[in-house]
Amino acid sequence: MTVLENAVHNLANALENLESKLENRLDDLSAADDAIAAARRQALAARKHASNASSGLTASISDLKTLLESSAHAKDERNGGS
Image (cartoon, rainbow, N blue to C red; front, side):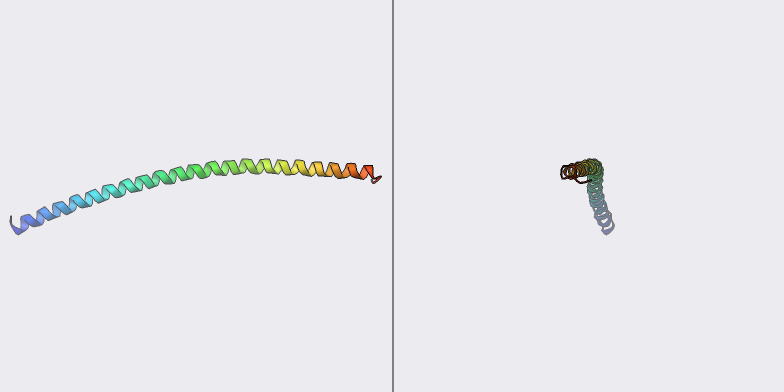
């Protein structure tokens, strides 16, 4: 082979290697995109669960306050208070 033929052959090999690396990188990026999408879905689900839990906790605290106020009022009435 001539020098030019060797250079063309080396260039073809280098391009094949580059193409292979690019394909691998695109596969990695695709997998990363899938992982990011899954993480976003999980974050959204967690946000919904946290919101529901917060609502339930707020209701529980309100109920507890009502019970405490009723208990204090009943105690005052038993002790002859107002």
